[in-house]
Image 1: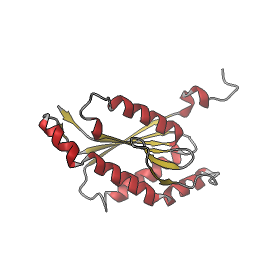
Image 2: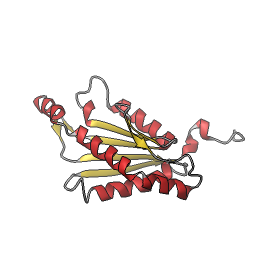
Image 3: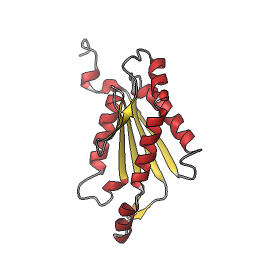
Amino acid sequence: MKFRPALLIGLGGYGSDIARRMSATIRRPDAPTSPLVGLIELHDDGKLIDGISGSEYGEIALADAATYTARFSAIAAGEDAIEKAIVESLGQLRRREILLPLREQRVEVAGETALYFIAPLGDDVGSPALIAFLEIVRRLTQSRLVGEKLHKTVLCFFPDLFPEHKDAEEP
């Protein structure tokens, strides 16, 4: 069996919810490859957390960011916390104590890691966070993650697909 490590990055409340559901599906208790899937969540309140362990990487100052531009600027200003979350999460996926038992079970772990950015379009947090996160990852691949093979995929959706997001007047 061949498996590519994956880091799911949920942006905003809805993006984090979908990323958490995807992670739960992939990280089945009986799957030996579960430790090869990481999860970072940026919540609407600005909390940046490891969705697997629950530990917090920091908080982005979104409370006073009333416009799209202000939210983008706040997220970009949180670059240090975002970098830390991404670098540490990627490091967790490649730990020796995870890889050795998988090799013994004849699981071939790909050298490339998949990064999935999950974000709603037009959302107050997920949408502005997407561009900032992509730029931070681009810069990381030129500095702290030089030589790291990353396959980036963006999964976007419209938040009004969720019943709780629809306007009260909609049927």
